[in-house]
Length: 488
Image (cartoon, rainbow, N blue to C red; front, top):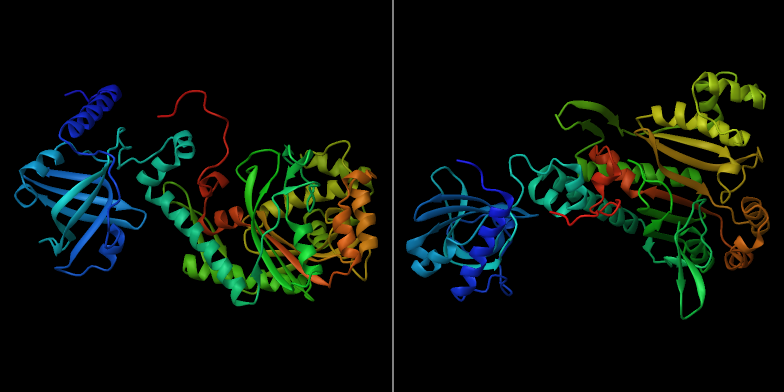
């Protein structure tokens, strides 16, 4: 027989909806008391216990007067056995109008089937929400990436692997918070709308506040406000924040992303590197089971292995570039550009010399580094908010942590000299004083303690720990071009 068309399936569900209403059943029911969710009851199974639970029907085996269902949610699944004799003829007739995808509430007693499956023998059930659209095929899941990202709820229902990635993300964020709080850091909040976007070099999103009559910007980083709190006397602070940058979208970039920033008074970039190393290893142990991460593709083939075992390697920026491009340090500027062209490295004709070096670093060092590497002592042009190195004033005391071919975390010995800070910000703004955050500079003039600071891209960290190939795979709702047609 031919498979029913989509329109026929939708019409059939509408017909069942109408039949429920005609029978006096509310198809989008009210609250339902549960003693446990499906996965919880399965995990903590006790034979012969009276329970009530609710969930979405994700499997249905019809055996005439007897039915076996799977009720599921993010906690897991639980099998339900429903017999017409136990629930009565009226309820049984209503159950004939139930489809896979519907939410139902079940009351019954737990038992174990002959095959050893923990189950609930239903004594009553209630329709809680009628699904008017059929779910994706459970064996094939959601394969279309457009549907996967635009209709994440279908991906979560049909693809256990996707759901596991997000469960890990939730656990990673929870463990980071716990790790920092256990070490005396307190979580704070700073403004997401700012009059001057600062703390990073990025294009902001702009809006307007009617009551104040001012333009505002969605923050590109929380750094300048967090440092005000160091001035105010909080020595150990962190914020798990949302940042917004009006720039390109790629497998590593989303215009809205999650960043951890933390500041530790009287510490430096070396202490911050050790803190990050300990934290990431702690999180990997709790969430991933250990320091060895195996990244596999959709066919379960091993793509790469990352070893997070401590201690992590530390090396200077200039030494890494010199090793990747022998003789680089002594090359004149034009010779460096010729070398890049010979290596097929695309360099803008207007790029400054430090930007050319950075491009070489990104292509020949960063993208080729899998295991953790702290890159230290970077050129000060790259990091205008970090403390100048005491021995070489062209460098700053920073690290950049690279894992799996991308930057995961920068860390600084923070610049707390208000005079030097003003000079660097003026240089960064091209002399446009209206772009300077005068309130931040005023705060520095009251005195900020020496401090170490870190940033960690949470989305990239989750990618690295879970083996996800795209940032879209670790965001519930990644930004995409609007769909012109109605979804579904």
